[in-house]
Amino acid sequence: MSLTLLQKKLLNDFQRNFPLSPTPYADIATTLNVTEAQVLQAFQELSKQAAISRIGAIIPPNQIGVSTLAAMSVPKDESERVALQVNHFREVNHNYERENAMNLWFVVIANDVTHLDSVINDIEATTGYKVLRFPLEKEFFIDLSFNLDLANA
Image 1 (cartoon, rainbow, N blue to C red):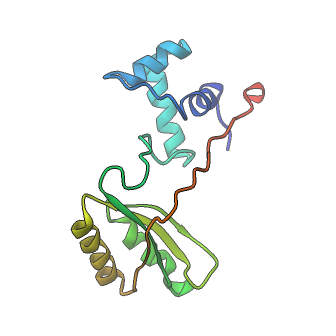
Image 2: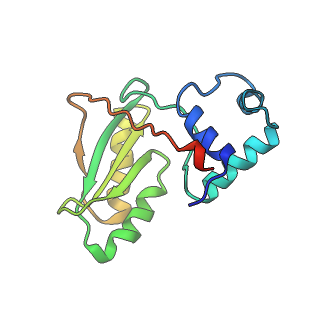
């Protein structure tokens, strides 16, 4: 994947401290001495290239609503279909496949426990597979930020 200097700066400089204002993209543009349209276009291209999947806050687990890590054991030939079905639930994120008997993992976030139970029940009914829950017992912080080489842009 080839990234422009602006795209690299957006990824480097705004992983943290994204402007919390009514005009965040204009604020970013001012900081980087480009136009808001250029910032928006760069983010659209990053999304199109799957370099980013979303722009939004990361809120610690269970600070707003409730969440659980969930896993399913899905036959290999069904995994793509089931993953797509799971992805249709707006309460699901971080859906990924692992090489294990429990091979489909995702996080379910909901307003409350009743909503969480309902979503998991709906996922089971839709996919035909049991969802196992792994609620948070101890939180570990892993810094997943990265630094791109701006010299080679």
